[in-house]
Image 1 (cartoon, helix red, strand yellow):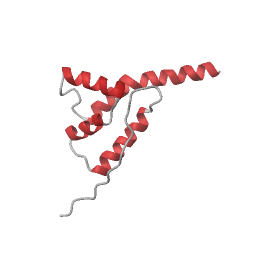
Image 2 (cartoon, helix red, strand yellow):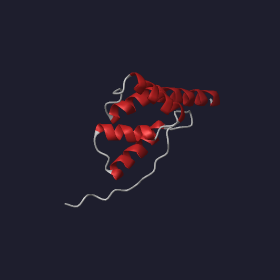
Image 3 (cartoon, rainbow, N blue to C red):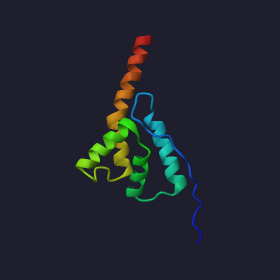
Image 4 (cartoon, helix red, strand yellow):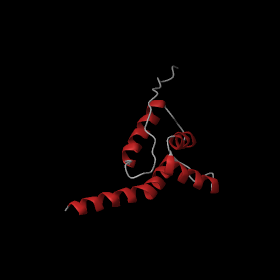
Length: 101
């Protein structure tokens, strides 16, 4: 049986700063995982973590130091990233819109 063709799709690195859009990064991540045929929770989480940088990477590694199994699945990692980084960027967007009004 022939193995499916794998595409090497590069994605942006998520920094966890205000100018980053987490949901867009999630879409890039999901596309790359599908294109590369990355299967299994451990491999998907490892791939996602390898595409974090700056504040987001420091946050994730800090959690992993205390609990190596903190991100048991990609869904858990995404949920924790969203809890940690999305509220702040959403709040900043709302504040900016309020100032313009």
